[in-house]
Amino acid sequence: MENHCLDHRVHASAIREAKESDLPIMQDIERSLGDAFRAIGMVRVAEDEPLPIDVLREYQADGRAWVYVDADDRPVAYLIAAVVDGDAHIDQVSVRPDHARRRIGLALMEHMMDWGRAQGCPAATLTTFVEVAWNGPYYERCGFRYLGDEELTPGLRRIRAAEAAHGLDEWPRACMRREL
Image 1 (spheres, helix red, strand yellow):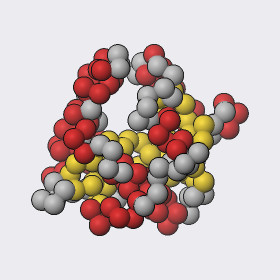
Image 2 (cartoon, rainbow, N blue to C red):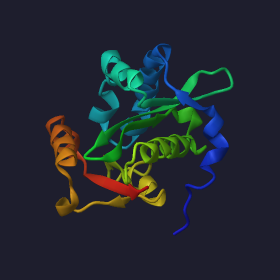
Image 3 (cartoon, one colour):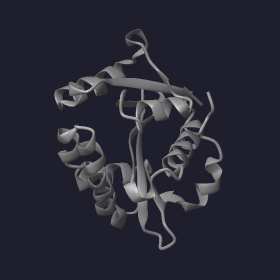
Image 4 (cartoon, rainbow, N blue to C red):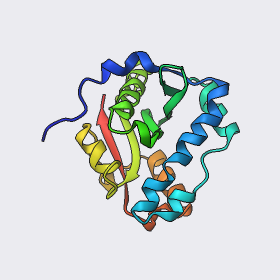
């Protein structure tokens, strides 16, 4: 299968750590994805509120939030990350729809994976919707593989349980991993 996730470094100069002033814009980016989810019948996801500013601020203060900016230094995409059971974990990556299909999300993921390597993480993980084209199938093209239940770490099990409690299991979800 062709890997559509090459040439990410061409975008690296447009990535920077998120600033306090970026946090409301990050929420707006998340809200902008509503129509895409609504169009495929995922209304609850479309209407879900983004993370609160105080939660985003924790990521930002810890150096685990990055934005991809346009020529005016305005964020058009963001990624927030954690370390889960020793692996770099993508908690959220979102790209404004009018900037989609430009490999911006990929550039952010690769940036985060470089961060993970620097932290000594052996792999990157994420949870995703299996049947949403810009989720599971996309991440698979980017080198992530689906994890079986027996491969889930305690932290990934906790994340999946929280997602299920939030109602996200109305649609098939899975954990994925990519070796760093």
